[in-house]
Image (cartoon, rainbow, N blue to C red; front, side, top):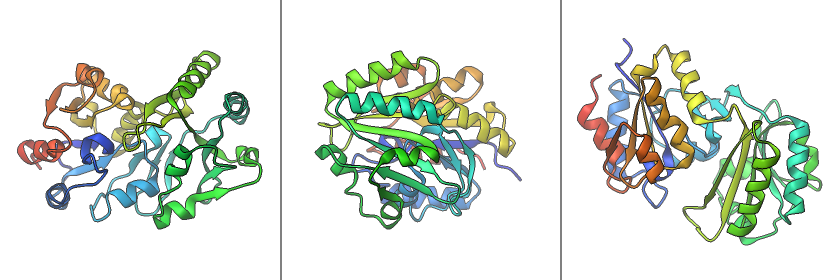
Length: 284
């Protein structure tokens, strides 16, 4: 029998602590809840390979929402249920703006068989920090190529640019003005290395709210049976699903905008607020 609710949580700043880890307390108790029938999954800006590593040991059975809704994927097999791609012509135009600002991007794509993360060259330490992830799945996904434009023929789901605040702010403003209705963009400081700012660019269909609606529908849930957890700006649209009947929960460390749209505020990520909420209120 289906459990009463579908629970979907962000990772960084929400389910994870400030060390980007799932605490022992969270792992133990969330594992017990899932094994007892809790329908729980993830909606993250991270890629599938990163999600796998972060929640290793957690028996998540349901598809996960990755790269801010660009993909909905099976955690075990890696098969994508949904792929929201950026049109090739748009990718080419965005790339011109990126290079005009003295930057180089990472390109996240699917080639029909596997996920790839392409880059042509490293132009700053913020990019080098990102490439420092030496987990096996991440290393397998990364591809350095002589001409990054060669990757534009694949199904591009995300363009990531990393640089200082001033550069990223100007680039973000330019992209928004040039593509006001085609793209979903997120501009933010790297929470684990705040001197570097990131701009992630997706197709307009790639946001957590759309992905949550789609996943809930696939699993047979109405939005009134969905509970979402978040903390940052890329979670705002997901929080606003409470207007359509969902229950949105912000952790105490969430941004003011996220809290403004939340149905409820719980303890912080450092105090395992999401898991404590689940332990207290879930009926299976």
